[in-house]
Length: 283
Image (cartoon, rainbow, N blue to C red; front, side):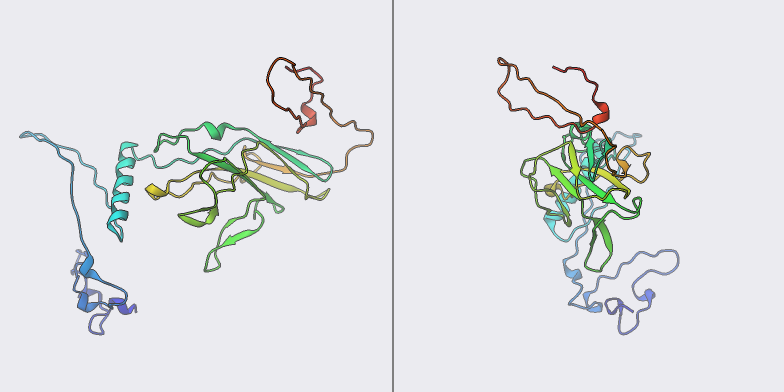
């Protein structure tokens, strides 16, 4: 019923396609199309290969890439991406792995801390370390939903707003230029611990952490984010229920003695997981 596919008032497929098993579309006469929606006078098809030499009796194995675009510049970028995929043995842009998340429930607070291994992983396609930041999500229904939803123009749920986000201090920040629903951070600086003090005792909360990369607008690659955890057996998901501290509990304490001859940094120490305190001295 699309008027763009109507020829002389007859939308029959036979007006536009070969008969029988040959279903190739091959009608490019712009008089059959609605001018406001289609302009086939500007269509172009290009087939090309690189140079190669063949002797009589030899064969060459070829890989064919199909690309399409609305502008020449976009077409060139798409061809460049296809070439990169070929050279990477068809391994597309990789996503930094999610870090290992550990959680500690406290009195009206949940403390999270995580590993930094995603910050050291090489992207198999770009051959660069393109890690950019972490996003933390919180759920009160065992991960069925992850907080405030993000919807597109048609009201479809496409994601969730993280309760905390930490990203590298660099030129990557703000909205992803290739995905207006993806926020890349505000140059907050990386952290590996976060305390959620907006919780109520006796309520179970689920937390998951993801990592994401910078993306590459020049190569038309938007930022990629690792998967959220789905069960507590996943390394990046924990379930925590804050509760009042037992009577008589002694908070974990620490004392820093600075060496007078080494370094000028100002050190602060926060005990994220009191159960890990051993009573030993560390240097």
